[in-house]
Length: 132
Image 1 (cartoon, rainbow, N blue to C red):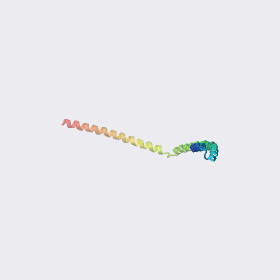
Image 2 (tube, rainbow, N blue to C red):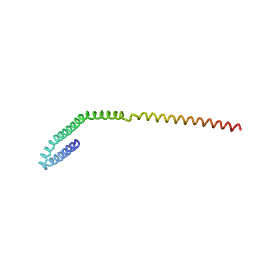
Image 3 (cartoon, one colour):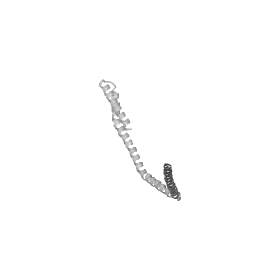
Image 4 (tube, rainbow, N blue to C red):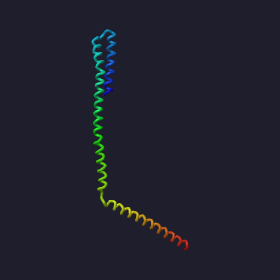
C-alpha cells in the first residue's frame, strides 16, 4: 500500500516536471494549475493511506493480543486432556508389559543356558574323538 502511494507520488512529481517544462515553452498553462493541485493533494493521499495502513496494523495487533489468553487456555486444556488420557489407560497394561518382559528375559536365559550346554557337549565330543 505504501509502495503504491509512493509510486503515485513519484509519478505525480514526474508529471509536474513535465508540466513545468511545457510551461517554459509557453504551452498548456492550464495544465500547470492541474499539476499544482495534484502535487498538493499527493502528500494528503499518502499520509491518509499510511494512516489507514497503520490503523489496520494496530487493529490486527490488538486482536492478536486479545486472542493470546484464549490460546494459552486452550493449550492448558490440551495438556490436561493428554494427562488424563494417560491416566485412563488400561490398568493392566503395565502388568502385561512386565509379564512380557519377564517372558523375554526367561527366554534369553534359556537360550544362553542351551548354548552353554551345547558348547560343553561339543567339547566332550572333541575330547572323545581325540582319545580314539
